Length: 268
Picture 1: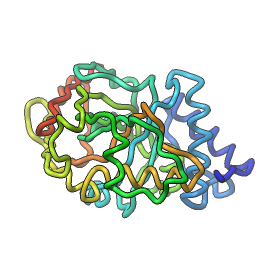
Picture 2: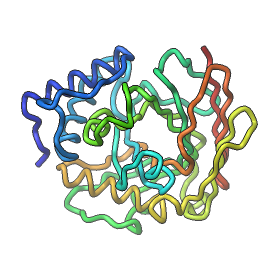
Picture 3: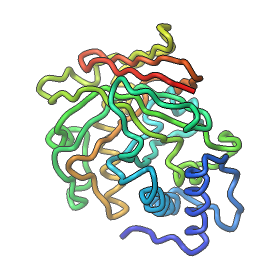
Picture 4: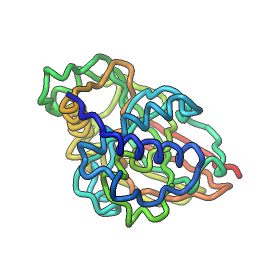
């Protein structure tokens, strides 16, 4: 059964959601309301999602998985994957222009995204990477939008980061391909370019050996909380390239072999 937050952790969810909605820096939470572990953090995260969905974020339409590659685990100093929500109001298609003013400090990550074709019932857990192909409807290149919305993220504890969706701020999606039309996702190479300059590259195998291993991790994590991946949900499986921070005027392109390109422009 999902862990239910105590009243003090509902207070934590309120503070986190209010900071997101107000675009104010999230300071360290007081000890009395700070989630003490990852299990409590995910329960708080659920409450945060409920609050966000009442406003401009809209309904949750999927998930992102963070810290699935060595480059991101090293960058953030966290050795295990973490899950976060994706919302309809912050999902865009390739060619989008976003405003820097909508973020505290916008950044991007290079991702392989999937759309689920069927529910993954918790009774099927534990799920394996090889179980995932039958649940995936389509795959696409994607940009994850992230936001450094913390007073000091390096001093922010991992449970608080998880409760606040772990930098997640949206996505830009490329054209979907069926698995039959897609290459082996472990073999693809992703490249991030900003203003025409390459700033990073990585391989699909960097994501826990295969992006479907990350997807299985998420399915198992949700099952342990009494939840599930659902048909139609979009999942970003983890960044192939270290986070890159942007400024107004930047033009971004990520390309993934066999999956295509996704572009984004940042305005004032």
